[in-house]
Length: 507
Figure 1 (cartoon, helix red, strand yellow):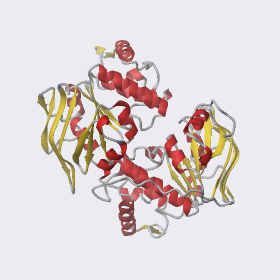
Figure 2: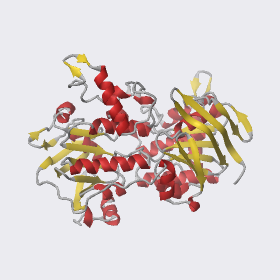
Figure 3: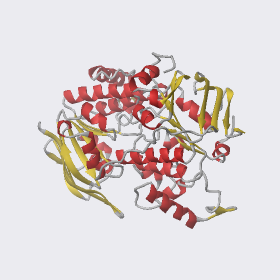
Figure 4: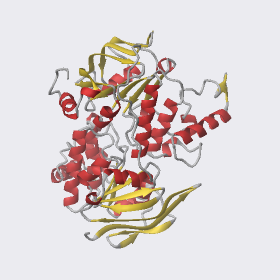
């Protein structure tokens, strides 16, 4: 291994009732892409927050370039050449790329900002690392993959030579993820030390030079892609073999249609047609998978089905009830659960406790309330059961949901939505940000709901997920459903062609 750019020795961090990091050692060389793996709650994010100055360790030492450092804030970390790209983008949507990157690093003449000089530097960095970002673009107008590039540019602008990437592909399409991998590889080739946190084991073999696995706040192994397998890594992460969901072959759905979508037409936020004359049906006891590259109308379709967006024309029928233009509460009262693609915007209230988030859609019902009287004890008991069943890891029921790791936030949302009688489950990107154990658990829950007679609409950009769980698969491209096929007759290649708009015949 080359000269160490970073060493973390004996890092220990305690919170009330929890040892988040327990004597952790990590070493990363210059020009190395070092993958950091572990379950949700394994201590990865805490360790990186210590390195980035967001937390102070109770014990241990951090060395950068052989020198002991004590970053007590992100500003300190940046002074030591440490940059971090968070899983949730830290960008101001209404500002330009240049303005976002300059924040906290402003240059100017007297009282005036020198945006021109900053933009020139950003263009130079963009060309140097093949990031292809327009400094004058407004962030809210950029696709998700380009916003990820802006975050990387922001770290490079601050002269980071140790770069922490926290789930950098969590919200990207496969094509966008491949582009980010090319950028990461180019950064490493120019000497940047990169810590790459991911839950997607396949990504490790695409870019990583070495792998460190954490479990229960400790390092349980360090290896290389050549010396291990995906199964071995998964077992190391969770401490046992990961079960695969039991999907019964030859499963027969009910003839009863639980969800009907008829000739739906929906506009996006810019007034462009996002869903174009879509019709589909989901039967009781069936999983219908919606496959497609993200950005082809799936988000707007789900928002209409859950009452978060109004359609221009068409009908939505759940059971026998026409719920076209109905409110989210009325749709939920029809026995509909919604696992949203953006948990922060539509799935949780960051400042509320875990217990309160777990009853957001039923807080007004018995036993959690009698009239206007709220029953805290019943809410707490419900939360205890949900946290145990769905393995939500937190110090207490009163912990604010916003302080949980991304994976535990997702498990909290899933626990709430699956914790009541259902007729229809709409799951949009349900495993985004989850570790391998949690993904296997959630997959089994979706299959169980189907087998109980619930209709399941699964929207996912993960083609393997769609193929593994769906009874039928509908492929969306540019707002239209190009084909609906039996999953047993589908292949990755044929679905991939449909997702790219290259094949429009029924399979």
